Length: 97
Length: 362
Image (tube, rainbow over all chains, first blue to last red; front, top):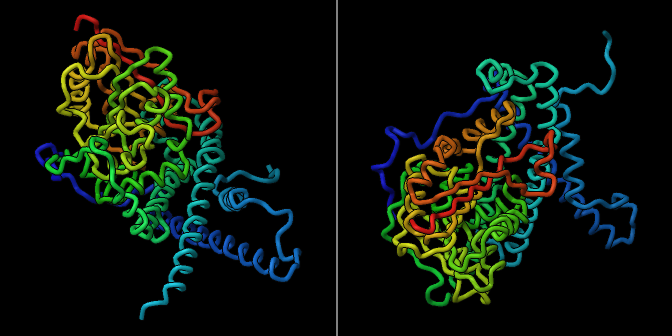
């Protein structure tokens, strides 16, 4: 296979500059950093949950497992809601006028 | 030092479990983005700006200054990046399963099910941009289609399982074709949906990507062998015989092509569809409502869709009339039962069904 360069837009760059959504590009990057960190926390939560279930099975101690058990998808939804809600800027209590 | 096979296996299994967890996190974040965050943008725009009759520069700049909109736009861009890229991304996941997936592709296929064209010149619009932010695009290597398939199957705006079945049903309400050509078939979901619904039909899927048509061929159930085939070809010049199909269809193809290529595709449709036959494109057209239109237009850059708006600039009535079609209908398409409710409960792509019927005397 080859590419038909004759139909290429002139001087089309293959990698465009970073897309920015906030006034300060550091904000864009710090949000990316935070989301990467949050994703790793979630990955560890699932890993810990598997270990707890394994230990509970081995020991017969059901108190080691979160009750009531939720599915992984439900847990992800709860975790993400807790994580992202502050980004909406919506107040949780009535303020001083 | 190499790890023992058993240790390596358990490490690989753990890595896959962690990748699944990571993708689950991203899936939940995308759902939150499309619902709660989208609703937050709507509320903030309504309370602080209001709604103009049409999208204009003043409205656009005021919306872009809203913090919730900035966050919403950031998430669209970066959740997609995270989904595909990085060591827990879908591209790395497919690479980790290279041996298993290569084995799938090495299984023998019956003659005629798959036709590859190693001489095909891929148009630059197809290879110069990593559409959807998939690194390298869907034709980068032999397993690229698996990455795309994993992305679609992990949910999101195009991952609705019933999408293709609903498209088929909308077509069958009007027409029962026996020779079907599916342009830009990807890894075959749309093609196989037609083949499943029409057991008497012959269905051909066409795509530029060798990886896509190979995966599509290998995913074709044996019961369909003999009446389904996949062809690596350019949809704008397929090389197939004149008037050889009753129905030419596509799903999410037009918006990936520049205007000149869409015009070529329409001309090719005029050549391939028999008199009285039909074209059915399932695609997107920009919404009228200003905020939805603004978000849709921004989706082009944020999701690496450089040609998203080009086909909407074509007068489809005129273009299809010039290709021998005597009627063009454009209607809303609901990918789910509640997709068209107003106000929208979630951000969605503005699906449209574009039907064109070729003149009997063309």
